[in-house]
Length: 238
Image (cartoon, rainbow, N blue to C red; front, side):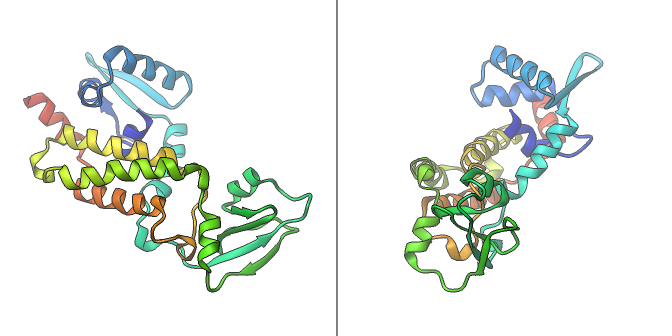
């Protein structure tokens, strides 16, 4: 549901009417009772706010939800052709930050105490930093998030099948496009947000994560985000 709101109604003032949300959840094969439980939990966690407009409930991201979605969007919707080119190699002290701390700074571990990351990332104060130049093949392989390779491989297989089998965007209803985009975004974000961004020179052309990125960008471009008003009008006429 957070993936859906982040894709369709991330901006301040945007909300999804209850009937529209129900129609999309139905398309996602989410049972009504499960959708109600999810909304209840998200309201309790401060992600979603709901209010009545007449007899219809309207749901929107809270300030917290908008902030979290805005922070994740650059990773989720990044254009592969605009990846950062400059990179750096970082050596940390034996008492320096741990892997998770370095990941939060934007660096990927390749060996104990050795990290790579974008040139724009700020290393720890006591780290030794070198500007990157030519990248050997082995370094690209070391920089990949190996624990996510299987997940990316499985997602790539699904995305490849989608690319070959989907109809044209004009042949899908606004609700169907919203459902399709939600499924793509949700399965992509659950992987891409688990590791730092790698600068383009450190990405192997055949890495499943990179191929997924290309496929996601292609599909989201082929099936542009429908306007909420278009979904409302389609559901009302259905």
